[in-house]
Amino acid sequence: MSKIVLANEGVFPITKDQNGNQIKTTPATGMHTSGTIQGEGKLAGVPSLFIRLAGCNLRCMWSLPNGALCRCDTPYASFEAEQDLQLNPEEIFALVRNNISNLNHLVLTGGEPMLQHRHLAPLAHRLKEELKLHLSIETNGTLFFEDVAQHIDLFSISPKLSNSNPSDKKRAAYNLQPSGPLSYHAEKRRNIEVLQKFIDFCNATGKELQLKFVVGQPSDYKEIKEDFLANLHNLNPADIMLMPLGATREELKTTSNMVAEMAISNGWRFAPRLHIDLFGSKAGV
Image (cartoon, rainbow, N blue to C red):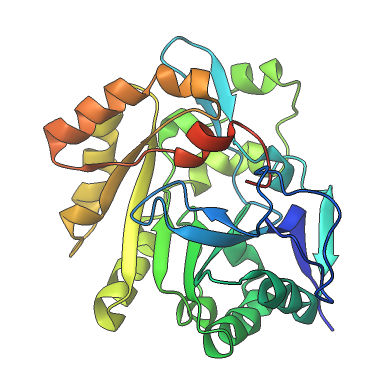
């Protein structure tokens, strides 16, 4: 049976194994129950279980307003995805079934989940049909595959702005060589054709969508308007969200007020990062 490649924490946060036996270690949330909250977007605050897939076709490396650097907040699922867990869909389904309890919301995240669409699609089908779960997928908006999309209720799409480009200076700061996605991130990060496919699919099927832009510079709103929104059609303005750049509470303090003002002045939604407020910057929460 084909396996799905997951990041370190796999299905999280959980308290039971595939056989339904209690796990001895406490989840990273510090709580003695499976599940956490969705920290971002329209469903912020909703009790949720997560599946984190490994591997990404981009390599985000941002600059904060003070010049400090902030790379992808889950580098173990992108930059260092060799540290992974491989499970077949039946094993993943069992983990979800044994830990979903009173929750009805499951988030497929990454990395970039669409990279594994062939194996993810049948799993998503089972999660919808047998467990009757609401499924969200968190994606960078560069890949669209209907075999997965047909089973999704909310598409949380985070198109990457030019501030995410891994420049020579940024790569040098992290001692990284320009290979793979580090060499082609800039040309792949913006895919208007794929974004339009998501919008058209949601308009045709009644599914939910949010475009969640990570914002770290005062001028980012111009790029959002000119490079993205001006080229997209039939997008509901209520689906545009701005999320402050930062993987820690300290980093978020440098961007949150700026982003809130930007959201208000443009009539867009501000997207907090509640999981960082609650649990700090760590995996598995």
